[in-house]
Image (cartoon, rainbow, N blue to C red; front, side, top):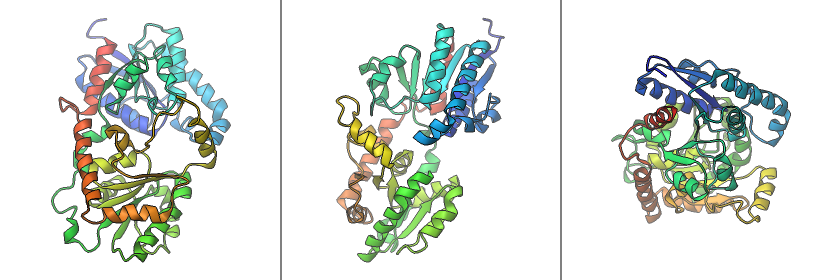
Length: 394
């Protein structure tokens, strides 16, 4: 193929987080490729802004939870077949699937059957290191390369005989200005009478259902012990009204904020956090905010996960905080149901709202985390990912 002909890239994502990764990847590929790049596939608004209209709306397939998936299953199956058919008909030079393995991997398997020589790249490693490790070996049949966000994942895939992999960096490492406090943003504990406690019950309605009242009880315990602090609760806009109503009678009523800019400003000024397990715990660690991590499972998922833990080799982790997993140590304390007594969480938080050895230990661990996650050449994560895709696309 001549250098004047365009490079055709198919990208398939299944939810909002994949759309964000896909848009950054597209921008980097256009910047780094010596050839013009044409994109087609399934994406969201951000990828459309980079020049790739989606075959259909992500809302058709971006569903969470057992019940909603079952209800939407016929449409998801239709969209899977439609997507695979479009990729096969489009004859791209490379296919990139991004996260959402229940959807994107089905597409990849269908495409591999029809186009066995097409390079297929998976951007975001499924959590084979956490559970169902046998998925890694199966992936090798239809994925040629994995771009991982976590530094330990290439070694895990090699150990499990999965596809080749490259650590390309987590998007968070590209945004030091969002996560690094400048002088005056986070006052030393000795210079403030009311340190800032970040309260993060989660961004999904189900998480708020399970976590918000618990966190209110924890703050009540801290207040009853005479601790003085201000609480800030970053929330998604659609849940703001509900959260404000349900926190109105807390002993320390939190300031509820929305929007990315306010959230990052709160992270840069916060002194400690009570956070529901998820990507936010990694954000807090990279921002240098000592945290207590908690999670209450959906009742059905709790039954399933407890059964799964009894099956040898199915579940492989003893920690669930992302920063803890990357570091290989429980730097931030974790609490999982049914071990969620407000008094115990309050004990841990109290030690983080003062200059204590527990606080210093977390801060030291977070400094190591930043070193572990840094890319050796200092390039942006999206550029590193784009370079691998361009190389494999030939």
